[in-house]
Length: 443
Image (cartoon, rainbow, N blue to C red; front, side, top):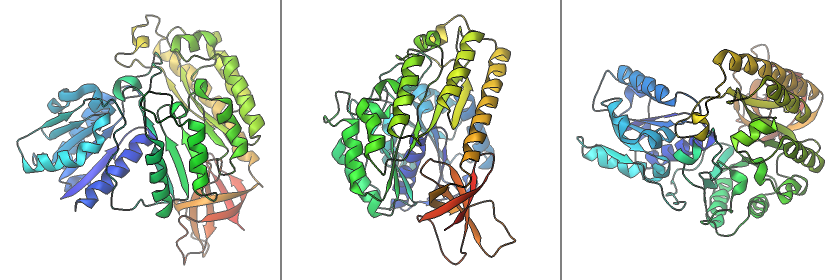
């Protein structure tokens, strides 16, 4: 049997799809392009607007590419599956499995059941009350960077966010299981581990935890290999403890890069978002982080045009972006998500006003990002090579490779053609800044 997986959304979905692909290969299946696949899995995201339309259009494209072959088994997994449930069967005659966010571990068995029973469909959308461990694939992880889920769900209920409804309440994974997985990944060649969670630094604060704090978990993972890199995403500012901040000074292999979602820079908007911190709180946290690690590179998430946001409040967000000096950001216009409190707010901002604010914010971020990249020229750094670069230079006898430095910046570097440099740490001097990446020379 052949399979294909299409992944939308966050890094947790990417990690889930990687696990699923390895499990299916363990069962003798092989990867194929959609037109040749017997099984196609859509791993979906519903955080941004119009996810239902994206799923509908993708299913329509699959139907065209497969020649309307009804024997193709299509599974819809992830957040949209959790949100829409049985409704998805009406989207396409090929959809036979709907698997919500807590059912990812059941998908391999469910697919085999459906293959053996061609007329059957299956909908798995029940939430579990604890973090259910998944089977370990026999196939080794491939690649120098590995992602490890440490918790699932969220208890914050920000008024704009659908995550608690599609991922469920927070459930922390056992620290023993996390450490076992990290050890195995390091044995299999991983050189960098990124710990994942919807609210990653709230790890251990729920009733399902084993009592291990997030800071304690970071120390334990860090100690597994002093030569590896360690990152985590995505923390919530309100859960960033003094101990979490201090670890940026304490742990040498904790990378000096943090994605810290601010969302807005005006206190009134933050209150209506139910973020539970003020702009002053956020700025104090940024200052504490940079005191612990002066070279820390910060990125963020921002929402513009939240219901009721005034022009003055938008300008406060712009001012906070300048003060924090974010090296990059993901910014979006507010959009209603079903079931969220903000979707019922009456004072929506007109789309043209939202778009104008987004364009101004992104222009500011472009300036900050370009300045941050330009400041790196001449600096010495270490790049973890992830693969060959699409930016090849045919005028040299070298091959161009790419990877990321400790700050998460993408760096291109020319290396010898007669070796596979994937997974190697290479000392590099930055020579040129592009719009979204850097160029360097080895040595």
